[in-house]
Image 1: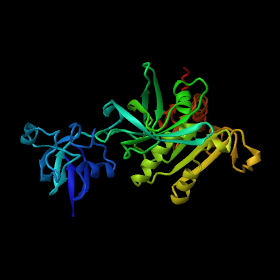
Image 2 (image 1 turned 45 degrees about the vertical axis):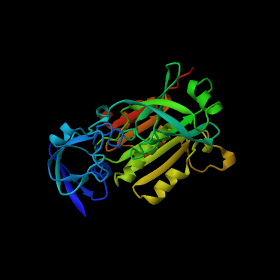
Image 3 (image 1 turned 90 degrees about the vertical axis):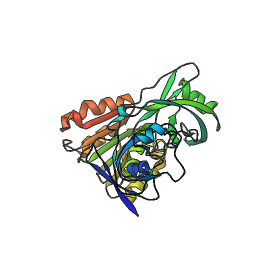
Image 4 (image 1 turned 180 degrees about the horizontal axis):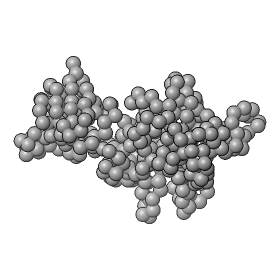
Length: 336
């Protein structure tokens, strides 16, 4: 059985099954409501029940006071529908609406993806989860007070196990540590979410451009669209030096194979002839310009090293791109 839920102050309606919480149903249908722990403790997902009935199968959550109940409030991360509902709840309109928080976390997976890129999986405490938007990043807080920023490579529904792609830079404060001393079970402290490199409402097809580990936020964005059944056309250009630098090449190949609205176009600037590369060569922004004489009908998402971002911002307007339709994130290198 399912019920209808209406947000009283927005023109938003969604279905909820009897086996899922109101928060799970909203997030599943791409309605961003605020939340924190997802365990009924923090109260971040508190909303007012205007009409209808809810139940708490596991008992009244600790984060809901007697006064809250008397005034008709519920915690959406624990409440399940027992009838059609009208609720008064705040929605997340942009990245600035999500609360910035700090968490301890533990490295639960350390995986080498090629000679100079590793994948870290960070697990938050069981009582915590990180609400974020696809494309955002976190800061790792170092013991000396310095910070290092890394994009989240996982989609937002994976809010307790966070995926980072980290490239080795000689002299890089965290990358030196990550490649030489970091091990599984290491404890870290993070702060997030941060950043405005997120999806924007539009009917236009998208061109996504990644340079190197700029693939991480693009992965988050594309996996979010797939999980939520978005069908906007995506052309994904991944720029790298050699084929080895396309460190998760099979994944975008699979996206392209399984979904007609996604095209994958890798571009190598230093084509490794020994590996028999027969694909595109040159700089990735030039490949986009060659394919698209008129960019006025596209939204552009670009993430990677500063020279790539600068080249995109400098050259794409000449091919008709409105600067309001380009969203970028420049990966600045921070030395020790």
